[in-house]
Length: 531
Image (cartoon, rainbow, N blue to C red; front, side):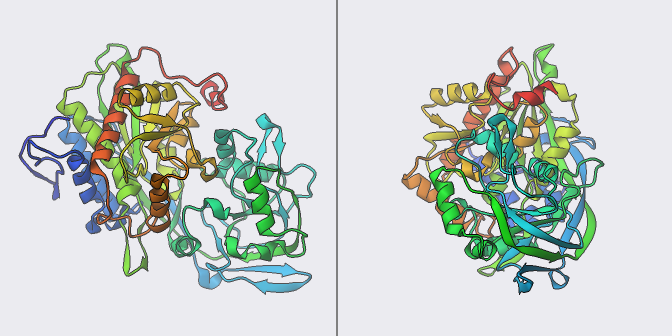
């Protein structure tokens, strides 16, 4: 990586990070300098639509301008994105189980949470059916609804998928839009999700605390994938037996079956659920930031390899240990810093690629991958011209980079590119080691995939039972979606540098290969390319 000139300048009241670096720059210094701004308290957690987010978008755009990148938004580097906002008024909302005519009031936050990523009906009363994982996948001849009386009922399911189903396919059918499509076709009106305690990223108390975050939906016409869903509830696994009493089953038994890889039973539950909801509504506008590093080939320069990351985080929330700012240093200032570092390298080293490289920094990921969904369906270049997306989201450089996890490794030729570049650097590669966490559909590459574009997400890998896995799990339990994901945490900056070098090399390889990236013949996601 070459060094920026030693002048530091001020643009729009925002210092250009990384512009004052000595010739003996330590590895990862530039990457960390970007995080120091993006995850600073003064940006107040970069919540979608907030002033802190606007400052972050201005900062990213300024870095792109400094690197001489071509603006590729709708207003310079910016693509405005409009959202409708929802916030539950818990003082006027309630959940009640009713069994044998006897009401059992529930405590919101302790027993369960009413989700507002769907627009809940003011009042719902319906019976409950346990539907296993709540999946229907014709490709695997799998149907959790077959033979059940589901019309007018609320589905109760354990998050995850059967071990017999390919992990990427199972993750796809667990996406919000696909899940509601299956519930709707079964005549159901809503759902209750219970996390498998063995695969929870966030402890329940923090999940409960974060329920006060404002949720959003895209205001553009035709973008509501869960229209008609009347209620969506997340249930505390520690209290799940309240649902199963009288069914002849316990939640612990069902989790044990799930962990063993056996088929989950499906059956009617004895209680019905009553829900009342009151909502506060509003609108905000936020920003995607888009820039192009032009290619050199007369024909291929009109095709684009995307490197993406999301800049938004959770903003200001309920204090945890006295701290209310969710800085989002690793989630995902780290990914944006990787984008900026790769862009810097291309500029400084005067890299020449046949195809153009497009840097897409999106908003609204924490609200349900909304900014990337908007960009993928409203691209600022011809949709057919985007050939690949390499997504960087919370890649966690907590230890040296010896093993790379590639989500979507086996789905397209991008997996071959990742293997080739990693091998050159002496880094091993693995596919998703924990498919039950559904990482494949939980970040922005998924929206590019849905448009038929081969895409992957890359992360630091670890092996089962290793000290690296223990470090990773500890971070998720203590810092993921918590104020402690801040600038004070220990980070391996040299490892982060190695990661950005790997991503940059992979993007160069894809951009210089004459053939477009393609889906593997047996990939489920090939169907999107044909649409």
